Length: 121
Length: 104
Image 1: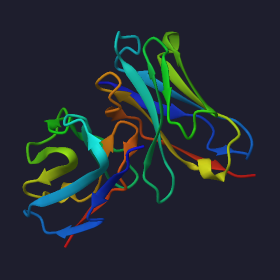
Image 2 (image 1 turned 135 degrees about the horizontal axis):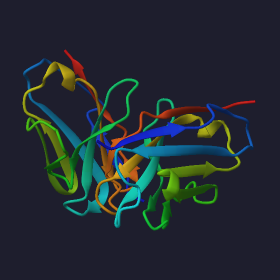
Image 3 (image 1 turned 90 degrees about the horizontal axis):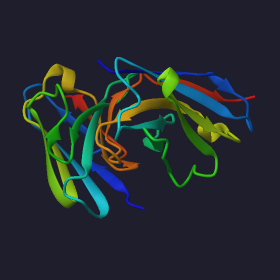
Image 4 (image 1 turned 90 degrees about the vertical axis):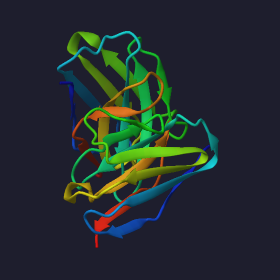
């Protein structure tokens, strides 16, 4: 059974870079056609898609974060990562990683349990 | 950019009743492109429906999805105690604001 687990710092200072890693177990991250993604949920707000990455490393980002976000894939470690630069309080959220069940569809299943990140000095 | 608006914001029903949740897109979308998720407090969302009407793995058949164009519906035929939760619709990178199904 495929399982995903986010990891990273729970507290980040304003203007710093947020880096999160999603570890995948119970399956391969290197399957032709597979996509992986990140979604966040700020307190009291709706879910927000951040970006997706294909097994070959092709990336897709939401327009509002495109200038600050980078996704990457490390097949040797069965991990994919999120990097968000110049964070502000508005980036405080629970960050989820997930597998995309149909290529480029952004239909996410399963999800990691979520990583709560607070941006504060 | 497409905006998804869900209604109602809150649905108060009793176990055994039928729940009908609506998701309206600001412009027409592909008929097989919508997804629905369930989220409980402190948990990650769970995919219920994808491609507008296909149930995800392990989802009971009391959950069904339908719709086309701008109007989509998630129906729970008979509410079980574990179904009281928050529900989101999704079209590619956009999510609705959610509908809370609460016990009446």
